[in-house]
Image (cartoon, rainbow, N blue to C red; front, side, top):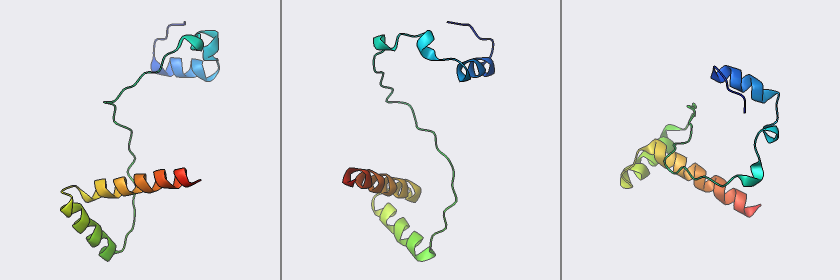
Length: 85
């Protein structure tokens, strides 16, 4: 396995090389990292004020931030949509 001086050098190397030349993937084992937080991206979403007010009321009932409730609802809907297909 080559040694790299920088992450950029390593990235450039792997863009033009195949890992199977260096790693026997048949010996690989699954790894679970339960404490990793997924990367997030900030977006702008325009909602009617009345809808946002209703969402905030629901979030308050659940004692959670309204943004978290929106994320939970979106995740549930996407998961359900994928199961239906």
